[in-house]
Length: 457
Image (cartoon, rainbow, N blue to C red; front, top):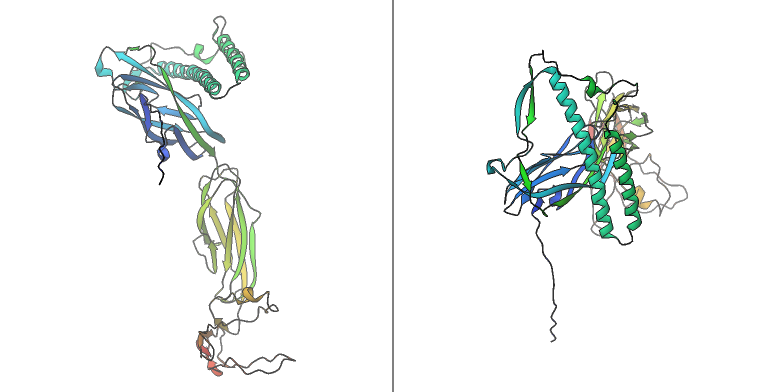
């Protein structure tokens, strides 16, 4: 017996701040999944500090659809901070591992009582109406500048990551630097002093028109974030953490060629089926719920119809097949119904999915209550096709010369009773063989609306 030794080498590391509680227990992936346009999705998680130092964090989301709350704040040493990631889009969008960065630094503060600060801490202020308008405008401008700054930082960080991960990416980096310089030049041109900002019509910009009316009374209350405590950043402690975000936003859409379904005349107690398809043409998967209503009253009334499946989910770009069955229990010329396929949050540009359904039925002289048989399908390759007018009674025997009896009911759906008699149908040109089957109820009377038990051996 030979023994071999294997030397295993590994390297471990620890970050000052890690993410916990992300969907699917991921380390650095935030999956919002399928989202509805203009609907806010929230995902909570935690930022956990693994150091004794005070950490300042700032989420630098360059995507307007993704926000973090709180966006900026402090994390005490060996503590955690609850974060809520929010996604909301006003148009169809697909994000795949979009890199969102969070900048962390070690900081020191003069008063440790403020070490748990973040932007969720607010104070109520009472302002004049005109003062409130000016403040809201200032917030809007600050948000715009911050967004432009985040976009620039995200572009730089992504470039650095790509350069470090792949060799020979110098050209791309230079191109991105040029693009970054152009963007900076545009930004400086926008911020350059001199001259009034004008809108498309040549009027002064809205912020220059807004002024505080000192004569107004302070009647408007607003929640204002508590100002960030003064702090000092510790040198060489800056680090940028990356979170890869995935999300798809759209409104459910469908495609089908079916508007009306009409079943041909069907005998009572028999079943006719119709198969149709519905395609999901949107970017997201969605649920559906089927119901059949009375076309006159609107009440849920399936009548002789049934639909399979009644509910489910259709994946993006996929088809779902449906089977509508018609099983009349009475003889009528029409069975009008409406098949409603409800799709939550359906695109308002599309009509609700409503299919008109109708059919007619005939009254048979008799109806055989037999279980479904697949004999025709099993034997279609070995023998001539069997006419649909025949019903099939199948026997299973454990051996030869063993008597097996099958019983079933025959219904008289007519308004009159009648006599019946069973007789064997002989095929022309075929020699008469010894009968393997025997009818134990060769004759009888079936009253109107009643059943009679038949037996074959």
